[in-house]
Image (cartoon, rainbow, N blue to C red; front, side):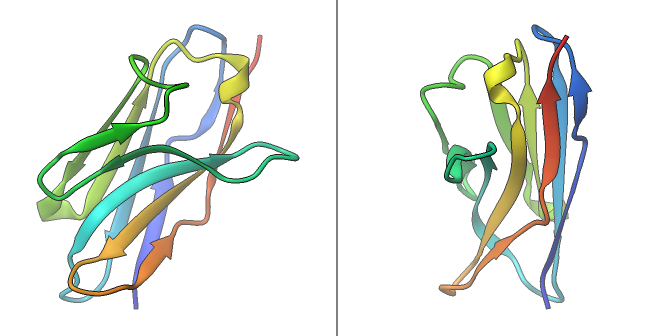
Length: 117
């Protein structure tokens, strides 16, 4: 069974920085693409950033130049460094991981990020 555990959310002032981490566990399982999505109240879940196993990245236009996604394949962990945060970045952030050699797709429980003065 696969579990994704997120950490690092919280409250930060506009212009501040915050880092998220997501550790994926599963006996003998590795992951191809991993990523972060977010959902603000009243909105649909949207892509923030994804990263392939070879570390090719993709970002939403709204976060380009401010957010950086990275991963550690040995630890099955994906990170999201968020800089220059804006109030509109406030949302629940979800980790996603696609199982390698499979169509299975997993989600974390979500972590709240609030940008407010």
